[in-house]
Length: 203
Image (cartoon, rainbow, N blue to C red; front, side, top):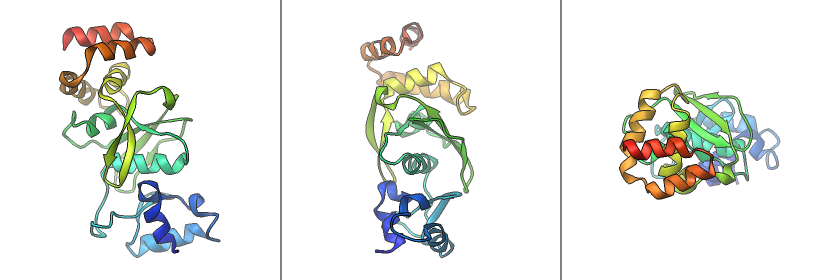
């Protein structure tokens, strides 16, 4: 089995050299070789992705897919969750593309700048406590905060990602789909009841 095939079969079709270290003597060189030939996409230094089988080699992932792939390979066998503005994008609450991907992860990680522009921000959280569902991105399925959890996260940290105007617009766009009773229950679990009540009152 080739390194190219291994990446294509990996979760979200993405891998880092360390993910392949048990199979190849020099996985970094192999991944660089395939990227140089245009067979793999280098998302960021040390992070690679195989294009979907039905896409041309020139295909590039959205920043949401790239963020999910990078987080998944950085935290193998652990849950990562798309959150904040990135979750809002997946839920269709923010139609315009943005230049940041936001992911909840078990432990803090420095931001990663993508080769194609934009950056991935990591937020250390207890991912088991987040209200999340599996949703599709371009190369597989990934955990994404529910609309209720997304609203709470955006309200709590509207400046996360440096796009406060977009965060407030996303809240307004998604509120008609929110189960308000469940939102208040979730807010109480996260000690966020007052802000949630304000959101419901102004929706």
